Length: 239
Ligand code: SAM
Image 1 (cartoon, rainbow, N blue to C red):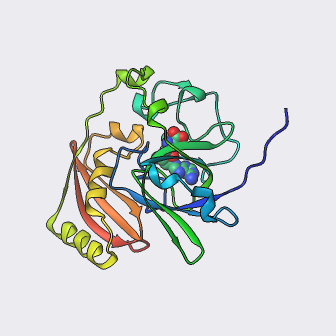
Image 2: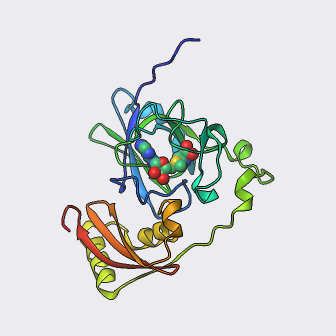
């Protein structure tokens, strides 16, 4: 069988400038916004005619920020605590023979301005700069399967963490929102409720401080027992 070569039809603009902190699946953090900018020659409005009537779309993309050629037949899904292994094709691991991802996201609006064709999306799990291979409408009549079973995932209970801001951090967050005319505070709560730490960190019982980059900010937070407190928002690059 021949190998195949695919074209990058679009690129993702996302608040996530590093992998740490990105939700592990779409839909988990509905406040996360982003844009998909179509590249020439796919930025002709004809390519998306009719898409505006769909509330959700599939994004087929490349996991471009992984170590290439580094996949294993067995992987350790974070939802199994990082101990148990399952087959790569029974997982959503980013390290696979073809590093291709698929995410259903909400289509908020379509912007067609100055030769730019941009799909505004929310609830995604994509790194900034992700190359997009394809966009397709989500078909609820065929793809919504309420009786579907979820394999090894049904053994794991997910309990969201409690997240709060210190007064200073809340003020910094609101200032950033006002300056940039973009939502941030709710998004940070949703992200940290999901506990982005790798599974092996979750076994650490002592209080710890963490940082993650969102937009141009380094978000600093501490974990005390199962409670997250965001205590500082600094320009990324400063310590
Ligand atoms: N929903 C997709 C799927 O099932 O194919 C992706 C699931 S994958 C577990 C989600 C993770 O991929 C994110 O938490 C982030 O760490 C990582 N990721 C997102 N975009 C990426 C990219 N362009 N390159 C490498 N890793 C990426």
